[in-house]
Length: 139
Image (cartoon, rainbow, N blue to C red; front, side, top):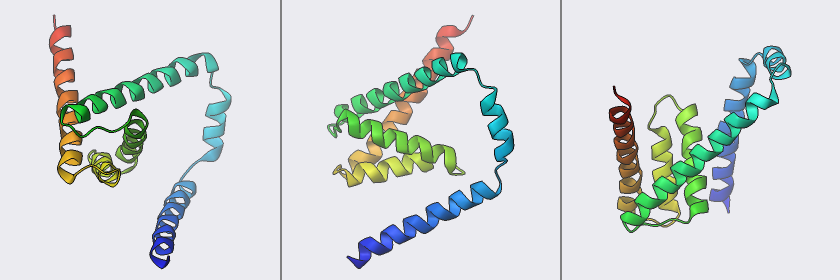
């Protein structure tokens, strides 16, 4: 019981510290002015595109995980991917989210090898797709 409580307390302190740091350095007035001037007609397509990309990425990672015989359900894949994207955006390195995804996939019952291979192979597939996109769109 105390280990669970200490884990929660550590998470709470880290989260509160990060939120406090952001709040202290955030210009709320400027953000409110920007939000007042936003046009919903332009926001909706962006939100739909973002949702489409999340679903696409979750499907891609799910296909990779099934290919290496380490399947996760779509909801777990989507959730872990979204958490990973959050950490990719908030941590100072681009691989922090991948490490979080590996850790969480391991907690979901995958072997360490399956978790690492799944995330790394998904990154390779993404890179191959980007290279293919560049090759196809060249003049």
